[in-house]
Image (cartoon, rainbow over all chains, first blue to last red; front, side, top):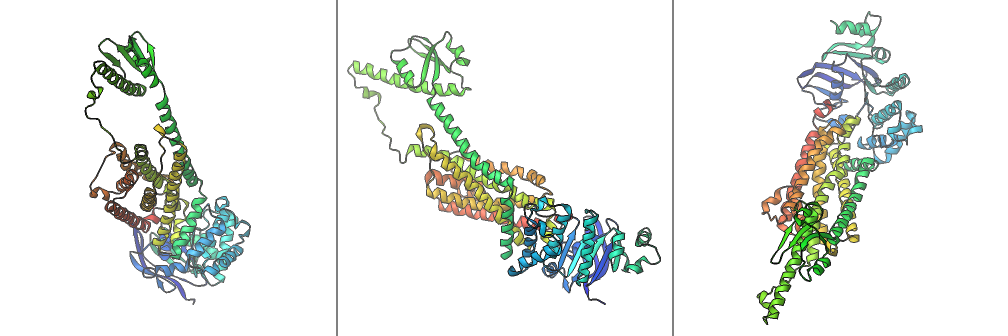
Amino acid sequence: MSPAAVKVDRLEKTLGKNKVLRGISLQANSGEIFGLLGPNGAGKTTTLRIICTLLAPDAGSVEVLGFDTRSAPEDVRRRVGVVTADIGVYPRLSARENITYFAELSGVLDGEVNQRVDAVLNRLDMASFANQRAESLSSGQKQKVAIARAIVHDPAVLMFDEPTSNLDVLASREIRNFMVESRGRGKCVIFSTHVLHDAERLCDRVTILHEGSVVATGPTADVRGAHRELEDAFLELVEK
Amino acid sequence: MKALGIVFRKEMREILRDRRTLMAIGLAALATPTVLIVISQVSTKTATQTYTVGYAGEIPVGLDTLLSATGLKLESVTDPAEAAKHQVDVGVVFQPTQIDEYYDPTRQGAQVADTRLQTVLGQYNAAKAAAALQQKGIDPGLLNPVPVKVHPLSSPTQAAGNAFLSFFLPYILITMVLTGGLSAALDSSAGERERKTLESLLLTPTPRSRILLGKILSVTLISLIAAIAAIGSMLLALTQVSLVGGTHIYLSPLAAVVMVWLAVLLAGSFSSLTLALGTLAKNFRQGQAYSTPLYFITIFPASIILFIPDFNPSLAYYLIPILNAVLVLRDAIVHNSVAWPALAVTSVSLVATGLFCWFAALRLFTREALLVRS
């Protein structure tokens, strides 16, 4: 079995008066696409935000490649890249400048920044618009900038939070291809989505969250069980 | 510290590509000289303008020549009191033993004409009295038993110029330091949330305190550039225009140094404060709404100099931020000297204010609600 890249243990979190996470545990490994599934409000985004240290847990613990999110948040952030549905970029900077800024802030060595930026620009086929200001880019191009800035420091853990929800069919396909490619490179890919069709096609293992609790976890085929599609299993679980 | 430089460079690059900020600085640099030129022309026009005196009765001998030389034009009217309401600036009835004057104090022209008329009449009366005494063989010097010889310790015209600067300079300094960097501060804080770049930024391993400090430094620099552009253009314009009486105004080197020092302190504090307010806001427009009261709070102390020009406060007053900067700068301009204890208290107060705002901004910038509310 691959080594655990992300270990979440009995995580709890309350936001305002709302108890969002009720003691969830999960584990995502290197070299796999791990699906974090659930309806809106299930706690997927909060879980991801805790994993990447943007939020602190009320109880429980999270380890990323052996680093605890509470005691070593900067070490965790150095090893994590996050792509969300919000493809916010700095509009007055070019695509290249956007990516360079994040490379520098993520601690890429001075002598390697340009090399790394060029590498991701090529990898994501961005050369044609690399020097264009971000405000003039299409949604798909902006999404590529968002991915590029998340991977420019070559993180071992990649998290995708509903990455295709604002994209057209072509751009969505590119994201899916990228996730598969990253898995091939040995990365731990965590894919949070409510699009179960995508999850079924891509994920090696899934965890289904509902109202802040884990209702199913395991290899995708096992969670689907006897149902024809993962969606049927999902509906049965959340409507119980 | 490397991260601080990275954030600073990126923020400056964005600011310098932001038309809103550049327009604000450009307009400030143009607006101040324009206002000064208008003031200069209005004051010159007021000083040289001829005002009309509507009169009835017989004009005392020689008075018409004096009035004419002072820019007061005589015009015969049937009812001077009625004419003084609209038709002429001042109404006068010459009687054998006295002169009745009618004017409306609510009219600015009437006020100026009244002042000129009083001056001319005073001189005329004195000359008449002196001539009468001389005719009787009495020394006219009797009318002025203790002559006063005035010895100004500094140039009265320069003092008038300094008084003008002591009001305008603090006012422009404070408003420009605040407004010059406001757009950049809101763009750098509320704008991050509005564009949804904040989460990605906070995901980098760079400590948030350095990210914030980089932002504060860039906003501080742009505020200083805006203030110096506005004040520089104002001083340049002052070399080309003169106020009443041909007064030319210049800023002493000491006052210039004090002004730059205060500008740095104020810019640091305002940058932290506006960034903190911007962090509270969800978008640029909300940030502007939160910042609006700042205009009134900051302009109020500058107005004190206008309404209480001789305000001489105790050292404790120099603890009050903004007011202290206004007072120190006023003293440096008017007296061309610095009260070092006052400057020290002011500096400590403004540095403490800056630190307080910085901690508040950092606290707001690191709270979870910042992301949850996003």
